[in-house]
Picture (tube, rainbow over the protein chains, first blue to last red):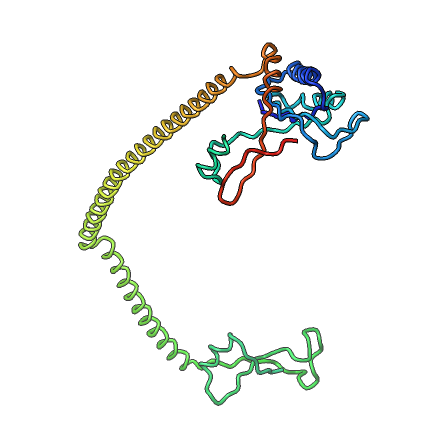
Length: 116
Length: 207
């Protein structure tokens, strides 16, 4: 199955509400037959520009990254659902390419530092 | 009435005629067959040249002698030709020559057969070698394919194992809450700065 990444921008909310929104999203994913690999939080940040969604202007948002495997046919419905979710400011699904074991641009030292 | 004409029929007459005379022949000029005879020629009776008996006898004799001699010569020559032909086909030399030719023919045929056999042997050997080559190549190709298949299967199995290992860390309905709490507790930051010497700086301003 191809591998996708959902870069999810949620509204800046309190912790329990954020948790609930994330839980809702992941459950939707799983209902549609996706296998969630990993869930990462990039924290609450200032958005690069002010975004308007669901009649609200947002300057701050919480970024989440969800790796998952799914069939390509469900993506359309999923995105539709996410756009309609009030707490979601911007959902973005990207394809994840197969990672190569090593890249030729960096040398060993830099790679070590980057890993840390 | 009389016209000077040329043509093939005239060549023979030309040889016999004396050189001073002009060659003429009777030709119907102005009048056709049904036209009436001219007044100047009314009572004309064409009389052929009369024969001189003495001359006739002499000529007859000479002619008969001449013809006899010519006939005799002709027969002689004909006989000579026929004899030569007969000797050619059934003379003493004929058998000898025929036998020689047959021997030659047989020798050549033998030589031809020998050559054929030799070439046949060479060809058989060559074909055998080629067959063996082809067999060997086929075997090699089969072995190669087998190996490639094995390689492929091995790689796929490796990938499966790797995925199985990673599957232990996947998010499931039970892990979900736990994972969400974990994620909310550890915000990850992928930003970094790098300068021309290759020094990496991970600490950034978090807004």
